[in-house]
Image 1 (tube, rainbow, N blue to C red):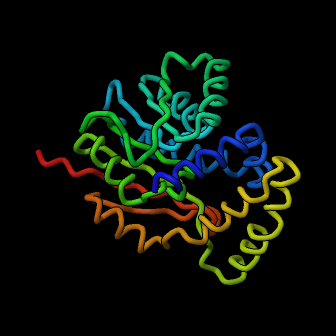
Image 2 (tube, rainbow, N blue to C red):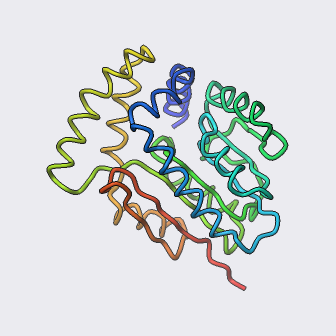
Length: 240
């Protein structure tokens, strides 16, 4: 697992300078809409918290972190990622937007979150669960650091169930996307990895079972854009 984690970190370090540009090009800017929807789910889940603590796991270049900070004004946000290259770009963006008083970055893997039990009112993972070197360990760590009654919101790419759309999606992701990625970032392999990681990700029913195994309850999910992306929400049960 340590070798895989290092490989993923190096891969994202390599594409970090062009990551944002490619994300927006390859998704036709729809990723921005998806993030806003996921952050609204976070905001709704903590509507009764005066000063919520929020953890953004696998934050990348901080697009989701920034959206959280802009949407939930009174929040304190910790943002973690295994790639120092991605974090460096995120830190620059956050400083330019004068949000660095609300956001603290840490280079950490999801499988080894150093914070104490029951710390966060909400945890968000945007397009990152696919990249956990140990998915179960990462989700269990998230469960541990969530407060009882806290909410996990996961935004993740998925394979459409519709056969026609699925075939077009697979054609784009498997063939065209790596070519575009290579032209802009010089790294076709990273974008072949994107295709492989999406197709290997569990279907909703199976992923919900994984979340349940980790202790989460009240799990629900919503398909976005005919299943190109999904939002999962899960709770850490409050035993009071």
